[in-house]
Length: 126
Image 1 (cartoon, helix red, strand yellow):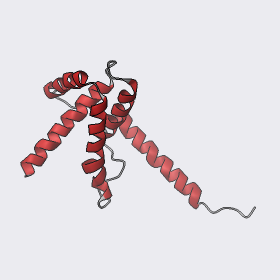
Image 2 (cartoon, rainbow, N blue to C red):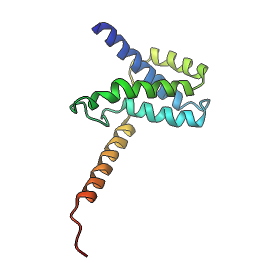
Image 3 (tube, rainbow, N blue to C red):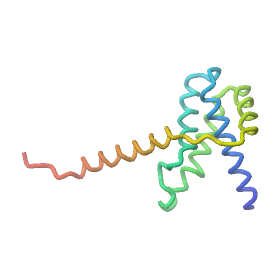
């Protein structure tokens, strides 16, 4: 069972890599490119939106939400484009890392902290 999980994770990483390549391909429609780029950037980011140490929710994004978003993004990309990039991803020695995805997640966390601070800041009587 552990081997099947490891194989599934490897296949998922290859699919994300192929999706990253497809998101940069001009043959992919703009709406599919935008969604695929967002999904791939998040999946390739070294930082999670919901940290893994948070019980249940920490793994929910990686085990449920990310595979569902990946499946939807793959369905939006034309089949022949996706197949071409799957072959490229299989042959690749290294997988990309998304610094832009990490920066977006950090920006979201900072924005959430600012909103929370603004909301909790004591309001003056005047």
